[in-house]
Image (cartoon, rainbow, N blue to C red; front, side, top):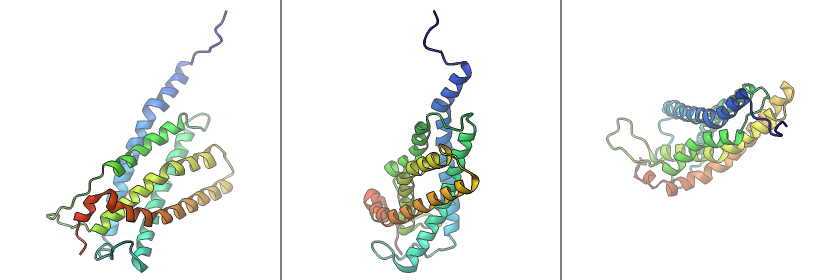
Length: 212
């Protein structure tokens, strides 16, 4: 009498183990590399606005300073969102069913570096640094990190649910992607002042950085 339970074939078992135990580590490494790239390249680009983060008023910046910060935030966010959209689409293409097995595990794994930044970041001023870092710049970068940590799982779910699980023609898929980006750009703009004010409370070391 044959068993009612059909054992997994070796290929299926290998794919399952790959998606559970190996590929999530690739997501973690990819996230770390991407964050380091955006941080390094972003810091280099911000040198083009050397006075943007200096001599800021207490609380949230206003006027043209706030507008410029939001433009930088959206620029960095667009690169980040574009890369992760491509990552999830490629990951789905590599699976024969155009789905990502254990997708939640992949998202949670890639989310870990962002959570680590929020919980374990300990900014400390270095008065001997060749290029001093202002209190405003540190606050800006940590606010962006918290925004990314807050939105990443929801953005990944939106990309997976609307672009992968529900495939559509190229034009319609492009419209969905633009709608996703617009929605999360609006969410980031709304969260920016919230996390800007929270950053000094969550990271007391920010107070040690120079203002002028």
